[in-house]
Length: 494
Ligand code: GLN
Image 1 (cartoon, protein in one colour):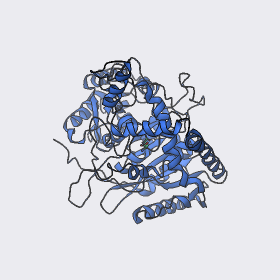
Image 2 (cartoon, protein in one colour; image 1 turned 90 degrees about the vertical axis):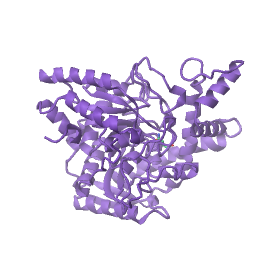
Image 3 (tube, protein in one colour; image 1 turned 60 degrees about the vertical axis):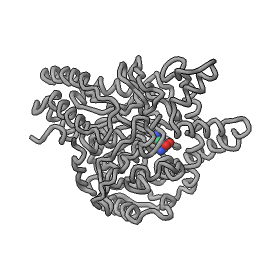
């Protein structure tokens, strides 16, 4: 049998049940790879001892023919999820050394279902970014490289860049991510992995460090569509501890993978065709249309004219909520505290000046500005009104179509440092993904091809609220038509 790390999550699950491999073997194989992957900087914390203990406990259950749906599967966890007694940093100096006294609901459900925690994955600071370059713990490197021989280090996308890089480089069987404006779908797109942002309210936000509470959603990054379906089944569900979590049964998403898409109506929104978009992305999108048509879907051109306002609306609403959520980091109760201060005011000032990085400070400044008395109506209130109309526009579109097809990102993986000095350039990466967050829709990115430099490109599907099953059907149809996309080499092995 091939090495345990080469198995998809579904294959590993079946191999574990059939006792062809033990969880301990799989866990040790992953830990050995993680040990050699320092160059990728995907993990902030590796919980090797805990992982081995969890694996042994899983093996004991599996030996008795017991165990949950993820029994023995080694996973990576984005460092935004609080894990009891295990450092949870949100990629920030502010939370360096923070040991949560509780476990997030999503991760507790993964452990309930038998998964093994390999460690905590690097990310943009407080999930703010599109390239994983804002992390206090240093950037993550994409395991994919251009075929031009230049060996330039590329970003793995953000903010779940540790999750995407670790999944692509086989440093975990699958990973958790969070998506506020695209942070699951974009990193998945640029690393040749699959990422799903569920409907707002599908997964509990309890115990996830808050960025923008009306947009944040947890979801999986995995190697294929089936693996994402398996992960989401365990991650989703109602949680009374999160008042925005919705009490609806969690369907068997895996059953939707491979189901026929015949008769589904696919909308292609003309406003997602950007000036200056690389022709390769345009061609990929057209291919996606052909694949779905060949699979029996009906293709409809649709119009979503408010799309052009989505980025400005997002970059008002998200910083506004962030500035409020991040007010709690004051050096008093937990997290970083400045060592020098003379009174309570300078304790706050020095703590926050030292604890937060530049991008987080920029968001707090923008957020407090748009919420301030003189500008609230002009910016925040107006943005909320446009947000509602963007939602209405989608509701209307979904009376005509079942799924909406767009590219996931406006470009393939870019070089580290290429956009980090220009925040507006960086924000433009979110152009195809923020609409889904503003409207609370489920969306996913699936690898659909390689660009001229051999780098992965993804296509995005958006679905009606709580219609993740149709989303998975459509994603699986694209995956099947696109065929295997290969994998990056292990150039990083030390
Ligand atoms: N890139 C977006 C931002 O920086 C989205 C981040 C996210 O989804 N967490 O806000």
